[in-house]
Image 1 (cartoon, rainbow, N blue to C red):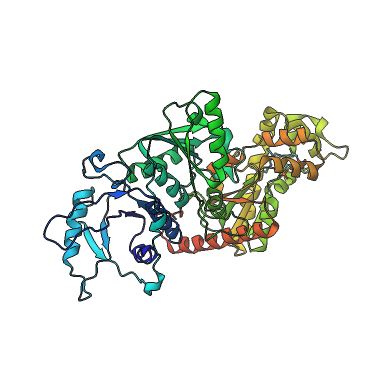
Image 2: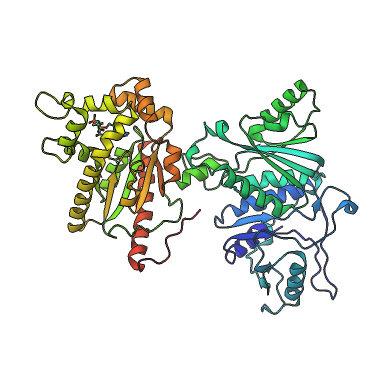
Length: 538
Ligand SMILES: CC(=O)SCCNC(=O)CCNC(=O)[C@H](O)C(C)(C)COP(=O)(O)OP(=O)(O)OC[C@H]1O[C@@H](n2cnc3c(N)ncnc32)[C@H](O)[C@@H]1OP(=O)(O)O
């Protein structure tokens, strides 16, 4: 088995999806049409699949899918009749490492392979085959097969598995492939939702439920279309695993093995048959960083999203191209100000909208008269200035009052902010950061090129605000409740940053976000206006 060199060679040609179909002994040199071979589902096949997915992890752009249609633990008579398989990404090219003796591209096996592939899958027209040139190294690098320990997998009519399945990654694919190999008829997937996501790291970046279901289902139907798939939301750790009488087997990872045992205890209480517990090994993540987990995990993936562009950017033609304006937002205690300071150190001009707000209240300021007219002169200090603390306690616990105030102050702050940006542009500053706590609530996305949001778990925000402003837990919670939630902000943001870890981790995030921003700005200046926009990596 020489998977890694073949993968490395294929990854140079394939941009997106690489389907792998194991066909040992496929005869491509004879005159007759080659037929698919049936492979018994054994522990060795499982470890081969597992190795393939883990090797593929170093080719980050590859979405690899090992087809399981001819791997089975039932007798060949029970196999469904072979028909053309509809893959979600119809193959455009079929790859082979069959080398011709003269080393050239002409190879009769290539034509056989093209014909064979076109008969098996719904392919793009004019499917061509391409020769791979894997660098196999010395024969000593071959991985010996462990046939002594090889055992045939059990099979079960109905199998259940649970997980969040956020940003479907190679470890998920291994878990799901094993489920597909164990299941004869149905695979029930309990997908974590709502309450079950509350304690997850960077939960705000978890893909919406529907999107996770869509990706998972597409993968499953691709690799084994003959199974029945039930994907259901679960809001507690058990879901239907403790109530479904038809289930026979539960698949768990080393980490969730105890969960499997707990399921069986509950089933016993519910007078249901015990499930076979099939455990799979966790795959190590070769790319894990200091603050990431060692196993391949969705939370590490979410971690890597911090500072990157989350979605294709919409060009805002309603504001001048220069300076490039980042709208920086985040709830109280999110660490927004520390991020603004770091961006300032990197060369951005930061416009603090809280400060501009305070200017508006000064006697003679653009909001002074109007605020007194609206709220009365009892919000004035003896020296005639507006008592902001008194205003704060009036408005922060009363949405109606706050709206009255912001209807007056926001337009005034926006005017001052625009003026400041114009001044920055005239001084040759290329990036302005509009630091505004309630940027999105105010609809100020229209004033910026990109929205960056700083997030922090709510519990931590409450602690920070209490410590900093000397207010009670209840007051801190009330203040946060008056603002948008982090998840709502993330939905409307282009870039997300999180300040929960050590300051140097935050600094690295900001540096990464800044470097990627510079790349975008440079691309932007080379691009005629109204032409296609930047693409995110995810
Ligand atoms: C669109 C924007 O984001 S503009 C910037 C925010 N300013 C506004 O919305 C104007 C209305 N708010 C105000 O005028 C003032 O906050 C006042 C008068 C109510 C209170 O003034 P002060 O006591 O000096 O408090 P300060 O202005 O520092 O605000 C305290 C906190 O509330 C936040 N805050 C300010 N306005 C709002 C608001 N409308 N909704 C929710 N939170 C707000 C501030 O960002 C600050 O957050 P932090 O805890 O992360 O530092």
